[in-house]
Length: 227
Image (cartoon, rainbow, N blue to C red; front, side, top):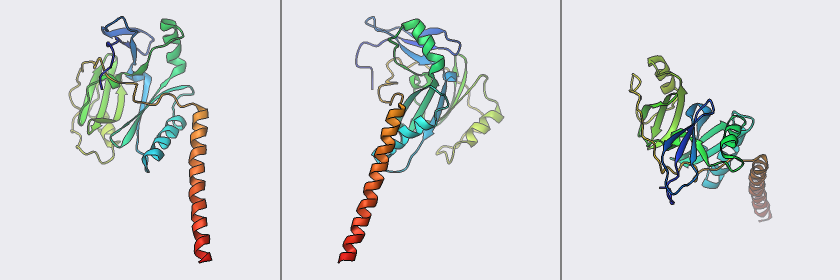
């Protein structure tokens, strides 16, 4: 999905708080900000159950498993699972506020503005290297390193992926410097930060659904005994 309005410019926020322009925008729009990969954590989550149940499970998991006390969160449904990204707002929010004031622009990990792949690759970033595994054009594994991976580091990354559909190469792929997808829809299809209140509501909803199922079971048992 392309950006439906004149394309805003993209800026990259580095791990030392600097903003670097990546693309020129159109129409004088405020930029969108990509967070350097080392500022972010990634996890692939595959819950079991129906669509509504898996959505709730992904939300709850994203909140409960955040590696930061005050996380920014982006969850995207794709390829039968959920890509979950976190970043530390205690670190990024002061930089965004200093540059943009109270009205901060949309932010997302820089990986979401990369072209999709089909299997294994290593991406050369401005400040390091990202090891990736893609399944059906969906990113399911990502790891950042300051230096290019050697054979040992690559093997360790590949072994973490359970039953990959494409076997990893024995040696790390040559790092690629990728173009930025300027009109990438990197934030609009995800769930933003899930608050504790929302988490409680989701938990109550799941509990109510379970209680209803149990009640129906015992009603059925009573009817059978009556017959």
